Image (cartoon, rainbow, N blue to C red):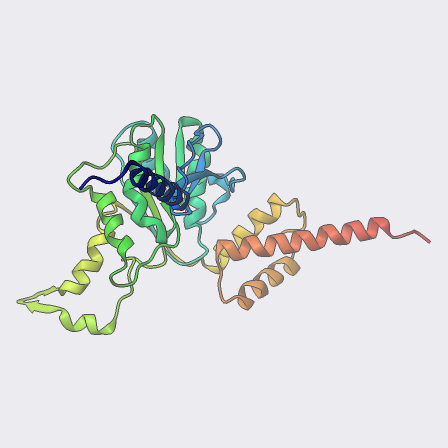
Length: 302
């Protein structure tokens, strides 16, 4: 039985209102990327849509400012130079003690090679599932991209774990030639290790074979072609970094026993001798000296 024309018109109006209502619920389309706005970007999700946001005030640091990590600088700089020049290069995993310059080294190589069209995209762990989407968006670009994951670690069965594996190794499609992954972590294998996993190890003759759980954890870190390890600084290395940053801030009495004692007390109070702690001490010491000099200059002379 055919519906009357009036009933058909009412159905059409209702369908149109339904479509309009659903359109309001749908997330807005992602805005076009202005690749000239910055050399560093962040991937963020807003209203369910992922987009690249330019970092307009990025942390600028020179390789020469990183002290006590010369071997690590050489490895990462060489790999990055190969990459920007179109030669084969590896994904990089930087692991080790906190505050020793892992993330600063990534920022420093960006600062050095940005004029050669190196770009960096920071991706948080919760957004690693979007890695294939990010790679698709940049694979045809002329720039060279580092996908940067800072302070990376996983718990068991986290979804981003497999997404990162896919980007590092490629799936059915080959990995993009203009994309590398640089990640920093305090864990060598990016996942926690438990005592019970030692029970899975098997002895085969004179050889020791890890169990499936350990093999699975190792398999992710092995997909990074270059491992760069960082270790805690000695006291002399820490004091040398303090001296470097005090010179940066224009402090003249850097070699005084007072500075040395204060720097060591500062590190002792934080249970760490790291580059980050040295930087914090230098800022505090230089700031106090500057405020003291200003106060003395303003003090009326009697």
